[in-house]
Amino acid sequence: MTTIQIISIVAALLIGICIGYVLFRYIIKGIYHGMLATAEKESEVLKQNKLLEVKAKYLNKKNELEKEAQQRNQRLQQGEQRLKQREQTLSQKLDEVNHRRQELDNFAHSLENERNLLSAKEEEVNKMEEQQLQKLEQISGLSADEAKARLVESLKDKARLDAAGYINEIVEEAKLNANQQARKIVIQTIQRTATETAIENSVSVFHIENDEVKGRIIGREGRNIRALEAACGVEIVVDDTPEAIVISAFDPIRREICRLALHQLVSDGRIHPARIEEVVAKVKKQLDNEIVETGKRTTIDLGIHGLHPELVRIVGKMKYRSSYGQNLLQHARETANLCAVMASELGLNPKKAKRAGLLHDIGKVPDEENEMPHALYGAKVAEKYKEKPDICNAIAAHHDEMEMQTLLAPIVQVCDAISGARPGARREIVEAYIKRLNDLEAIAMSYPGVTKTYAIQAGRELRVIVGADKMTDEQTEALSGEIANKIQTEMTYPGQVKITVIRETRSVAYAK
Image 1 (spheres, helix red, strand yellow):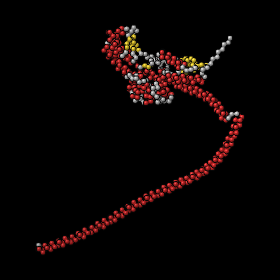
Image 2 (cartoon, rainbow, N blue to C red; image 1 turned 90 degrees about the horizontal axis):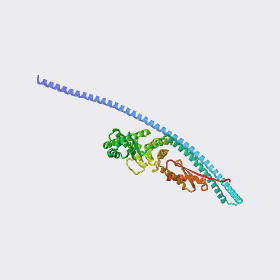
Image 3 (spheres, one colour; image 1 turned 45 degrees about the vertical axis):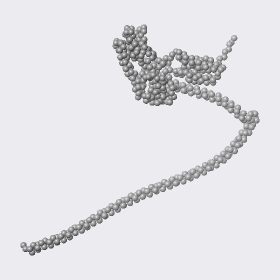
Image 4 (cartoon, rainbow, N blue to C red; image 1 turned 45 degrees about the horizontal axis):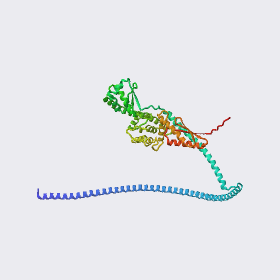
């Protein structure tokens, strides 16, 4: 191949490349213009779609605003209607008020006219009264003031007599009704809770099978009996009484410990000082457990719940205490039942009353010596173990050593007196009983006009005889009240004392 052919081939290739390049540029431009046209069409479509969406939102918003505007217009129209109605009602009320004002003015005018007429008539009546008074003064010879004074005095005397009669009737009626109601409540209460009489003493008797046991109890040179007395804190009397040993002590718990220890020692047969101390210690523990069990049984029997364990123990300890010969636990149970019944009769809480009645004498069984009155000490103990204030007040006030704050306190006081004052409840020393009767008679004899006095019915009634020439009937009524008040303030006695004042007139003549 020649050079000219190679050049011609190369030239042809270059021309072809140039033509291809030019065609390629035209093709690219065509594609580019097509894409631009397509993009412009798509953008136009998007623009139209967006415009349509905006128009739709605008129309929706416009509709909503128009609806809100319509609702507001409706509310405004309703408010305007209500205002118009109120204006109409107010105008009607104003018309009514003006009409009533006119009526009142007319009525006031008529009243003024009537008042003027009444004043004129009153002046006429006053003139007529003056004329009548002048005529009466001329006829009677007394002035108006003197006649008025005489009339007032006569009316005072009559009113005084009438008032005295009414007062006596009212007092008698009140006493009758009050006594009937009180008797009814107290009798019902006592009848529902009848208990046994007092049986407690300061000695206990231990029975043995034969008198040979006495020597074993005494021991060699009395060492056994001395050890037993020292361990129990009692006095043991071994005398000629057949088949009996007397245990003496003021503390019933000590007597009971000694009695139980003697029973175990005699049953066992081994009696010597070491054995005595062992048995006494064991019996003390048993008795402490029995005291707790007694307290629990008592609270369960009475239906009292939630007592502090220490208060339960104190209640059980009452079994071995006595007051004026009356067993303290029996007295507390009886008082609790009385309080519950009486509280029920009076419409109060019987459970609280029963709780206060059971605890009212816990101050009589102190664990340590103290100089406080048992009522105040008992209230202090109850307060210490979280009892309620009304129960503490009832305990403290049942002997009037503290002011009563609730109705529970007088109920406990009355039921305590009923339990302690009923016949057979407590033993009373003969000397104290006679002294009380003499004091009753001496108080009545201290009044002037009293001639004789008699204390009857075991000191529950006082008959006072006065001289008929020294005292009137009205004074006898006053005398009975004065004697009753003086007895209340100066004496202490169970139950109540009835004072009967007797005034009589006797006329004596002799036929010869």
